[in-house]
Length: 183
Image 1: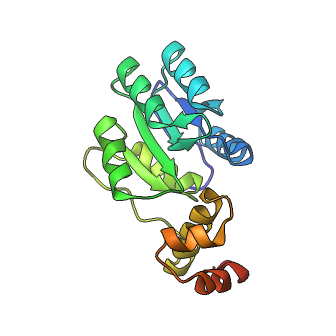
Image 2 (image 1 turned 45 degrees about the vertical axis):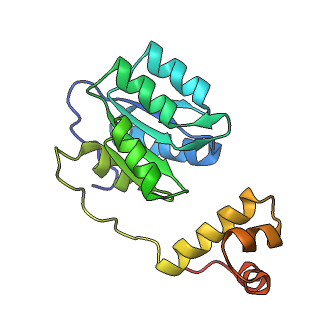
Image 3 (image 1 turned 120 degrees about the vertical axis):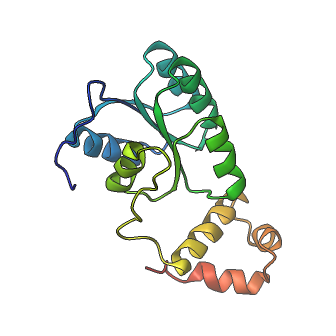
């Protein structure tokens, strides 16, 4: 299922909402190769406007956007088109946000970085059937490193504040930040 078009039925419209422009462009190109008719948005406002004007059959929405929460886009799309299949993508994986996304109407919830095949599998899953596991999942060390990096960025690169929030000794955090990312 690499890049060949997939039988999506009549309506192949796909809304992609993400504020990471390089990722958004790569994903849009990959999804077009798989047979989707893609429309992109880089913010909650733009995503809601497209969802209201032209509700798509499929959507991939980032949870955290610069101007708000991607769940607002999910809600708008679900109101306008109850049968749409929506996958929420996030780099901030947490059980609470996964539950909130599914309650609002997301079909699935994937952590970044998710590749196009993982996203297509999640979009096209039937009923309660789970999609196959990812081909190349991140290692536990890499997931930990990604989490630490995100908290560090959210704390405006303040080592002491990041260490406090992660309940970690400041010197331990400094050693982790000085190393390269694990594979």
